[in-house]
Image (cartoon, protein in one colour):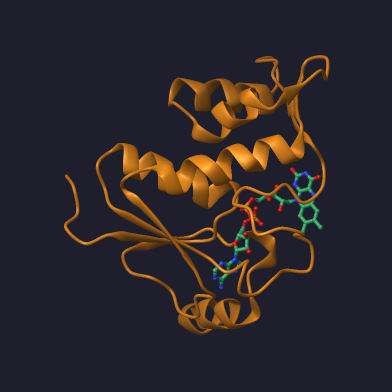
Length: 153
Ligand SMILES: Cc1cc2nc3c(=O)[nH]c(=O)nc-3n(C[C@H](O)[C@H](O)[C@H](O)COP(=O)(O)OP(=O)(O)OC[C@H]3O[C@@H](n4cnc5c(N)ncnc54)[C@H](O)[C@@H]3O)c2cc1C
């Protein structure tokens, strides 16, 4: 089933970019809202979608452990993020390690180029419906407060 209204995804990091891509590939129109460019976070340094904030490794590719198995499953499902990681891969033994700049550049270039994805630079203040919140550990205070209020905590 394809929704008539666009789906709203908040956060253009790893999770939001993957979600936007997967929905768009399934013929849904997606609006991806990312605040960097308007408002920064305490850790990100650029405005690029899919910026890695610390380590350059996605860890093991071995299917004998949970992390490797998860990646193998994501590949079977056509993971966009792993495809970008493969294009930016650097030597790292059995780990999937990447050149951080090449990786985020790949995400940053490919997401807005998808005909079904529109990227909007803004800080979202309320929970979207229908939508996905993918704002990660550095969710802005105002959105975090909105989530807290909605959940009554
Ligand atoms: C300092 C630090 C170091 C880390 N180091 C590692 C590490 O080494 N290895 C590891 O695996 N994980 C690490 N993490 C965790 C890391 O954040 C996650 O692995 C990964 O980035 C999560 O992806 P994500 O898409 O959920 O969040 P992110 O990649 O952070 O993306 C969330 C996006 O949402 C945007 N956003 C937030 N609030 C709003 C809003 N109200 N409106 C619009 N956009 C908004 C942000 O700008 C951001 O671009 C670290 C986290 C931090 C904070």
